[in-house]
Image 1: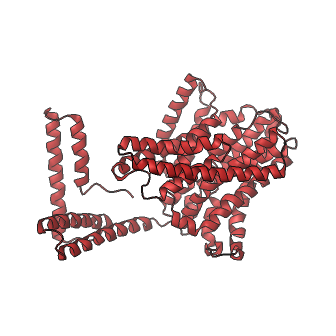
Image 2: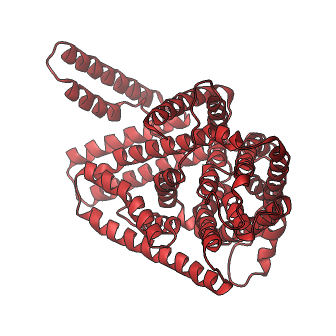
Image 3: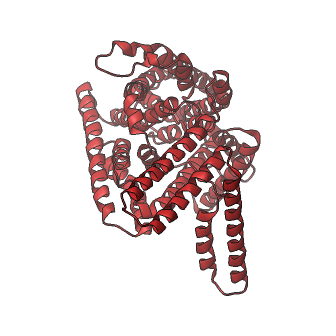
Length: 524
């Protein structure tokens, strides 16, 4: 894209994101659906240039931080408990889907070679659970479902991209089964080893950096230092990034040191939101490119291919979760069998097989022409993959809230109650420890009273947020605290309006007062 097209694309993405956020809040539709639909509508506006997302930009620009963030904030204990279902989905189902889609495409497009068909199968094999996870978390679906769907996505991108790379190699060079197995071992082992090495070095480096800004910069560079060199060395960049993120996420030093954690987490949350939103909008904007090269004769085979592939990926995933999961009881070793997952949970997991922009980026990175990959069929290939992404995203995400409610898996208050009860428990533990220190004479009376007042006020605030009944004295204290904070804010504004303090001091003291305000709610 030229500078002018890039500028227009940026404006379109910004407008669609803002409009989608507004509409999503009003009509209760997941952001991802509106981002894609409005992006597709914008693609056909008069004067809008054709926008074809460059595959390298998507795979190298977007994928590393998104994969790293998901791996870093994964739940190790829960993921370990569900390692068998996660592995079965991420490796087993992704592999089966790749070859099943390849067989269907070979049937519909007979001039497509097996290597090309497998490459296209690998493009639609990985899921993009962003829409599903946002719906599940909003409705507080059981945490085990969320863990399995998120854990699957951490690995299936690596599996699909590995299969895609091997298939592309087979398109352009002599290829054998032995060579394929050797390359698979090299790609996997190399990616894991390199990612762990990056995580180890990054953890040592972060201990020596104290400046918050520098810590955030290093945290942003880490996924790219894991992904790009691993990819250039012929390893799996996704696996390297996952391993680096998982290694750092399970270490005490964490993503950032304590002094930088709050701004750092805010930075990453905003970055991930922007990247995910931009990806969905780019997917919608690519609709015009997807249908551009289709002629009248190609429409029938393209529509047939899209319908057949969509049916295969949806039906295969539902069958896998309902029929293959219970077979885990016959696996050796100690593990949580799939049949311990109720059928309702398995149905939701099976329905959460949306595809996303990564699939489109993969197919766009295919060579235009190669043996078994006729260039005149490129329009059909793009249409089939693009249609699968659109149909699975909109067709599966839209009914998901209703499905969760009908199955009785939408527990709107469960997570909030658990969060508040946990906060109460840790504050009460601190008060109990304070009593022990006072009894042992380890602190003077004045300090003890100060800390006791601090923690009791915090506990009362938590009780207020939980809707618990407070006695009249506690209510008076909270009301007094609100009034005093309001008075301080008024004084702060007067000092600024009279020119006695700078805007920088105004903002700094305002942030400090936020911490004192009992009406400021913590976010979980």
